[in-house]
Every structure is written in C-alpha cells, then in structure tokens.
Image (tube, rainbow, N blue to C red; front, top):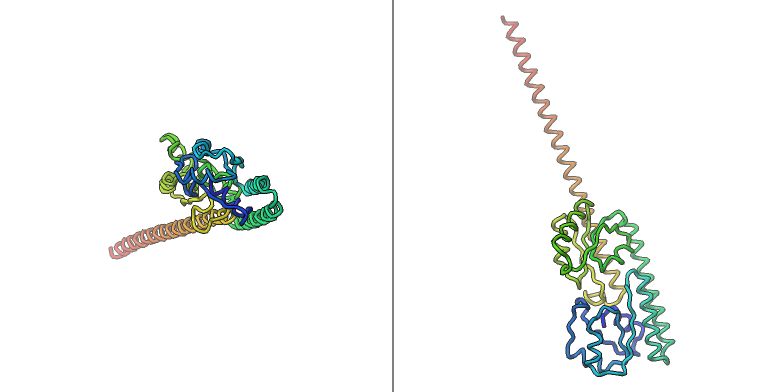
Length: 288
C-alpha cells in the first residue's frame, strides 16, 4: 500500500517480484483517495501488504473483484531502525509463503537489507554522539517521535497533524517551546508543515522537515537512505542553531564590552571635569 512496504519488497524480492505502491510517498495514507489505476493494480495482484492505517483498503479489494489475493498485515511503527528490521523479516516471510521456491533468495536479500540498515544506524548514532544532540531540545510531530527519540534528542513536546490541533493546543505548544528554549521544530512531510514552520518562526527555532516514507524526496528510495537523509537534516539544523547562538553570544559580549567602554569613558570624563573644576577653584583662590 505504501512505499515503506514497497521499498522493502523491492529489496527483498528483487527481480522475482513486480511491485506497485498505491499511495504516493508524500501523501498521508489515511487521507488517500483510490483511483481506477489502483483498482486495476489490485485486480492483478497476488499479494497485498498493508500497515493497518489504510481505511480504504477493504473497499479497494472488493471493488477490484480479486477474491484470490493474499492479504498480509505487516503493521506497527518502523522507527526506530530495530522496528524496520522487523518489517524486513515480515516481508521476507510473506514473500516466502507466496513464492516458497525462492525463499533462499529472499533470505539472503533480507539479510543484506538488515546489514545495510544496521550499518546506517550505527553511523547516525556515531554522528549524533559527536554533535551532542542529547543536549538539544526539540518539539516534534508525533509521527517522527520514534526516530527523533532514538537519535537522542530531548523531546519536550509532540504535536498531531494540523487538522487535529485546536487553537488552545497550538498556544500551549508555543508556550512550552518558548519556556524550554527549543532549538528545533521537527515536521513530518506527509502530514503538512505549515504549523511547524510558523511555530519555529515564532520562537526563533530551526524548522526541519523529515519524511517517513521512502521516495518522497530524491535520494531516499530505501529505508536506509531515508533515515540517513533525515538524520542529515537534523544534524545540519543543529549546526545552524549552534552557529546562530554562537553569533548571538559574541554579539552580546561585544555589546557588554561596548557598554563597559562607554561607562569607563563616562566615568573618566566625569573625573576629568571634576578635576578641572577643582583646579579652577584652587587657581581662583590663589589669585585672590
């Protein structure tokens, strides 16, 4: 149904399978409207993998008239990466059940996919540790919480899709973010990003847009590439924030130094004037 599933199927199944993803990667699956091409695709399918948040799926299968299709729920979150490894194994098992003659190939492919994900996750964690993200406070869209939390960021608040946020919710979120000194506001691309953009602008934080579906952004065609991309967006935002904060600190120090200089100059001027007046008085008295 989605590219998080189709990307794993393509990697594990290889040339043994033909894969069609129904929902485009930048679209929220819960709000997707099925098309005639989707009906046709399902009518010819042997296997349908789904996550469980596709309210239109049963109607789509019924409309297609395909009574022989095998329907397998993979389900559950795919962040952090350990959950994605479970996805890979479930995809492997689903393909092996439908095409048992290729089960050894699916096993080997799944192992390589898991190795790639593990290596990418380790690289991300090494970079996160070096950058000190555990000291960085963020506000995060709920669908990205698992990934952001795994990386070690301090999540002070999460928020729902904009259509499910009341004005009171937004005000509470803004107040919390300001009070905590949040550095990043992290959005989820398929859920929309206008709310996060305004919040970041209001509190002076960096706005970051992540994707949780492979292929939504060029260069994110697999899960490993997607989390690497997402991590880079977060790392770059942290560096920008730290740079800006450093510049602000330098500016404040310069202002403090300038204020001190002005005070010293003023004090020196006063002393000079007092001294001049005193000398003038003394000189006047001597003449008398």
